[in-house]
Length: 261
Image (cartoon, rainbow, N blue to C red):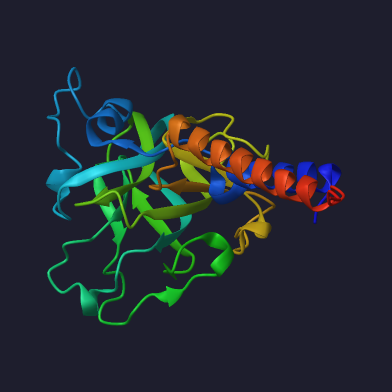
């Protein structure tokens, strides 16, 4: 039976798994639609109405995450970035009405969805590496859009869950470039979100994630996944402590010499 040192090591491993596994310590939960839209400036005083993400037509948005940067462009400026959409939503062949159609969106030059669970339909999405935590992926592709009018824009890029917070989806974003304007840290070369504001479940990933960046060392992961509330984490840790105590007691009893009569 394990001794005290082995029990402590076992317990430390469980607590580390609880706190670090599945991204618990790496990111926050996706946020509700209203909070996401406020962050993106899609609610008054901008003059746009709440529910703009739902109104894009993929279904009722429940939650999401995003990154954002203010940019100034000339007329004819071109925005490009590389993206890979990952999802745990069932493929269209088993989801014919699109009840679960999570999507990626951009807010500038205009608000629009540019990728969703039906990407490439009827060809199914490719399998995603197990290490990503997602079942399906589009693989990296390039988004491109031109600004007809010069001005200052809030460039937001994000992912939205539809109908339900689960199954969740995510976007890998890399190599954001702007011809006719300036983007800060578009390659995420600083290894963080310098130059961007973020909301929800966002993190910087390397090729260790299971998918390599298209340029450089780093890429942004914008995820619609939620993580357990602190109370849930507390319950897991409490359970680990209880299990460790039981094992230690059993180990203690096993080394006590039997009584003689």
